[in-house]
Image (cartoon, rainbow, N blue to C red; front, top):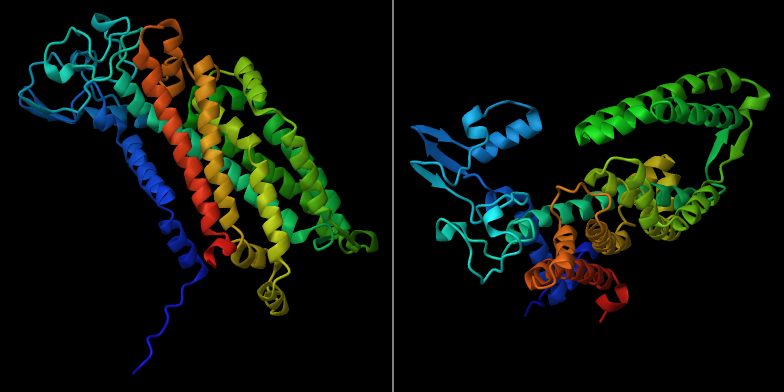
Length: 430
């Protein structure tokens, strides 16, 4: 009889199989996926306009029209429909979201703080506030649905910024150390001068333009930031040109070691000493409230843990046989680092990112609860929870937003533990 061949799993396949065996983590991943779908389709689940409607013989897609006006600056609404209450219009037919209220919409007939089980002043059953209202008459369920988008966006964007910075700096520190990277003395001096001048001309002189763009919109800030980066790159390039001549001299051609690990490690220690919440308070005091500003500050101050994880993994990976073989084949250090060492060092970083998302959501919720950093008109889980302070009898304002924050943070913590256990070779060997 032929013996059955054993199936050989790759390390990634074994890690995924181990993750699937962890039922709490696996189901948490599914729930996070469902929350992501809710966040993406929030306007189709809770909005004060129909998804599609027929009005005076014309087929209208109100939500998509609002998207076009918001993102592209088009003026598509007539004055009559722009200010109209769509729930009271005589529509021939319409397909409505399940919740017929926008998160910031005020229903003064059901204010202040109407209970989900209490008597509500509504025209029909479809307009009921299923989870009640807050002190201003805003629908709580609509706020929770749209708050899911804000919380996940804050967590993912801020940790995306942290991951880019932390992975890059940690990989450079761990792979090159203090003795592996050498440059000519001409490149070192001209490059250092170029970086300082580039920061001065690209960012310091344009700080007011960046601040005004940040207060205007995210796209305006992105365009202004790209302009600053172009100025920075241009100044650095101009200052670097003389190094080609200086390299021909004996002084300029002399090669020196760059203390990459030492420099990045000191930067990490400085960043760890900065209190994130206090920094956000300071920025919020001098800048216009902006959700993107909160995400940027969280991301720019929470990359240190990722950098330390990546540095430790790179210190271990750079001495392995396949890295030495790649060096023997004459591959450049950048190619080895990004194509060979980095992909095999990212697994522990995923654990830190998962925990970081939960931490970022908690920070944003705490700031919204205090009314700091986020615009007052933006409805978040923290702002809904804050409304419960002035309405002690409105139990639903504390229970539902509090449960939402608790559940999401718990899900990401379980995911982080699941990733950690899945990549642990000691647990896989059992």
